Amino acid sequence: MLTPQENERLTRVGRGTPMGETLRRYWLPAALSSELPDRDGAPIRVRILGEDLVAFRDSDGKVGLVDAFCPHRRAPMFFGRNEECGLRCVYHGWKFDRDGACVDMPSEPPDSLFKSKVTINAYPTYEAGGMLWTYMGPPEFQPAPPDGELLRAPATHRHVSKTYEDCNYLQAVEGGFDSAHVLILHNQKIGDRSFLSNYDATVPRIEVEPTDYGYLYTGIRSRGDLQHVRVYHYVMPVMQIRGQNHAFDPEILTINGHYWVPMDDEHTVIYNFMYSDNPAVPLTQKFIDESEHEIGRGPEDLDPERPFRLKARLSNDFFIDRDLQKRTFTGIPGINTQDIALQVGMGPIVDRSREHLGTTDRAVIVLRRLLLEAVDTVEAGGSPRGTDPATFRALRGGNHTVEPGADWHEALQAELLVRF
Ligand code: FES
Ligand SMILES: [Fe+2]
Image 1 (cartoon, rainbow, N blue to C red):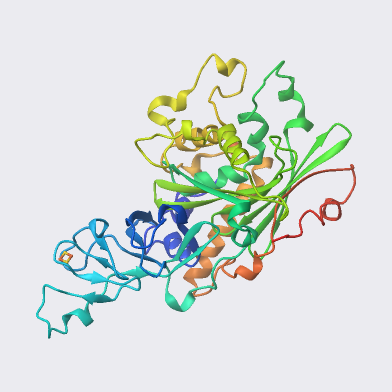
Image 2: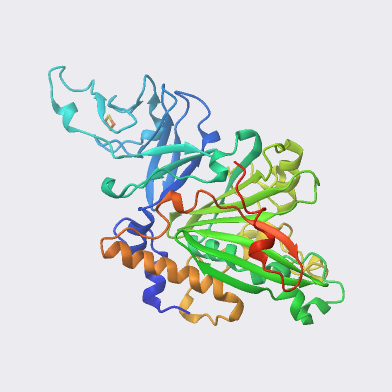
């Protein structure tokens, strides 16, 4: 449970708010690289941390991320011409390069110096892992660019997608670390429902170890005579890395995770990623398609009218099927949709002063504590935890079965060594 003040502090992301200023100290994904396939191609709209921006890939292949509105008379830059290393506003022709400098102003006399005095707000960008990243904070605090195994893996070995979610980012992030829900919400076969009384099978023992980047999270469940250990990482402020075995193709194991990036206080973009655990094994398109389909994020689940949005949404009750609910736990098809249904159904910003957290909510509690600590650090003029990429460049998740009583750190040591 939080005080209403703490909840405000954690959830508001606009410029000038405590969390808004804190999130601006990190590199964040702003778009998929695949949204900007061509040099001098069509610009795209980007909404991030409550700011409206436009991204364009210039003639050099580098991406500019600038204010969505022209500094002349605030015309929409989205309609601009992307040409000869700059984006030209089509209202009066002012042109800006990817750094925001005004490089042409045809509406002013040729000898005018006005051009040199005008800029469009532009943020630094960086491309890696199939994503376009940006840093929106003070230049003097700009960290080294992001790093990690996903960002180093070749394009043949990784897959990144994105989905919009209509609620505050923190509901989505917390959902990722609320592992007690996994065997309940995502249960696909209720059977005799006895699993609900089988404490060991449903309730994981959780270990949360704070680190320089966020925390290392372990969920340990008894399974027969063995213990099943899942190792996750929370990389501040909005990322999860987890290890996952896949059943579709026994040859391919993947590391998976998400970035949950606030568009504004009440909307989030989820960047979903997976990459092959093994440099000798690229991902196949079949594997990618089956994985996305299985969790409810396949092409047939997406709304053709609204890019990156699911057909299932609150206004159609996420297609809940009360008959199916007699056999699966939720009656909502698709694991991903189940998570989103519950998080969005809480309302745009959940009132955390009305919660009653139990023992398995520990990971959520520590996550909030770390975020509040980061806000305090930024307010005191310091650099928050998790801004230095050296602290998270060598992380991977794990998913393993170990003998009871065995030290999982030792048992999983080899599996947790990065291979890219
Ligand atoms: S509004 Fe953009 S050039 Fe005039
Ligand atoms: Fe879930």
